Length: 279
Image (cartoon, rainbow, N blue to C red; front, side, top):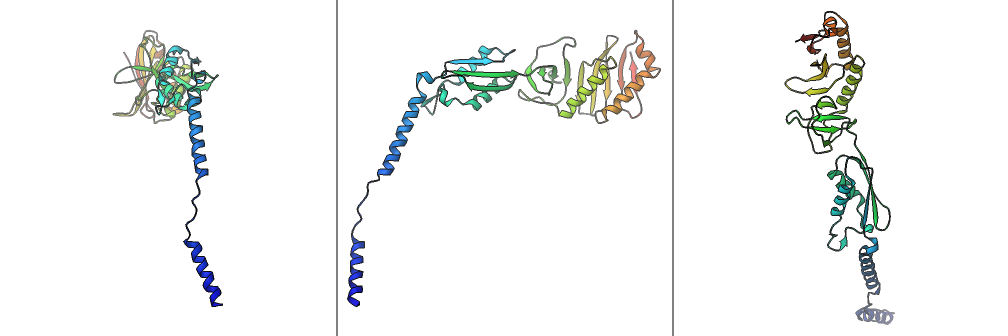
């Protein structure tokens, strides 16, 4: 019994003391080689001439020149990624990044879509904001086009008269930006509609915060500029009701309908009281 255990232990120790035969890592070499081949093939693929962007089509641009957009994209795709991959490769076309770059360069575009139209062609489809009114800076008096949703997107030339409704207030930002809260835009739309119903065509809206919060609506009465001064914290319906009542009640109604009179302003900020002045 002792001898059997002794010899078994000695033999086991002899086996453990023998050096193991090294096995060449064929699997690792195969994986590394495969990765190198695939990477090399991908590099070659991205550099094939027949897979480089050669044509840029711009669809939907109206006020913006499609050539300007095409040239901008061409310049954006100049050079290489990581000094290896050409940016013009249709395979590596950065759709989302390119859309953001175009949006920054052309803020008048509301939507931008970049799509591959072939092995060497990309199509850029855009829609533009529609400028239906102007947002103006109180300090510089410079105006910019503003959409119906309140997005200010591009500088506007000087317009004499009342070609566009002008809205002052809010803070200026980088195009495109929204200077007003949605509630303020809703207030403007409501006043425009209700005043139009009584033949008052507003030309300007001025939102003031200090020294006291107020809204001034400018329009023309008997071809003379005049103003309606409002407290924006008061419900719109309440303010309009006070205005309509005052314009139907003498002596204001009598003088207001007189074609020779020139109204200076109507102030509706005091509760249950209408203050007005004629020149």
